[in-house]
Image (tube, rainbow, N blue to C red; front, side, top):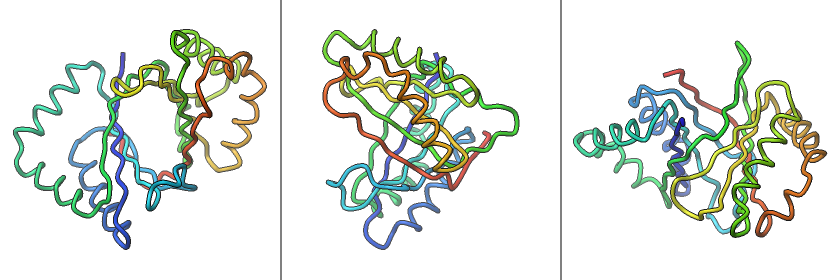
Length: 206
């Protein structure tokens, strides 16, 4: 099962673009595929300002995650670079996630917008929620398909649906189409889902 890592950084006031440039260099140094997004619209009013999200992908197994993290712990220069970025931020966090279903991009496709919808299943309903989300993914059809993933730490029932598009309207059209296939999903989740919209400003093919 493939895995990926998201790095979330909330820059200090006046440091957003400095953090962004440092994140680009850090991502490039990994040699892996992925992207960096800047917020289109903040999802959390409790944050001083919206966060920048870096996606590092291409991990086929958990052993690959181990290898990257072990390499980082042995690399003093890499640690120094990360600390320098942290000093520019009010908040830093990272999340390892398991990809349950991938995007299946058509050849030459270049998305510009990423929608991340996070929901938490009611106790005992996680397997059914995942099954229903996979159903919606297939019923929408076309490419790219929604990515269904879940973090390997944090709330046990948390599931993420990531949708890619070439514009805000493209993502909105796909969101509206997906609503038609929700079925009993609202009854399977606890509370209201949280949606984050980001614009891709950096991408790497690894």
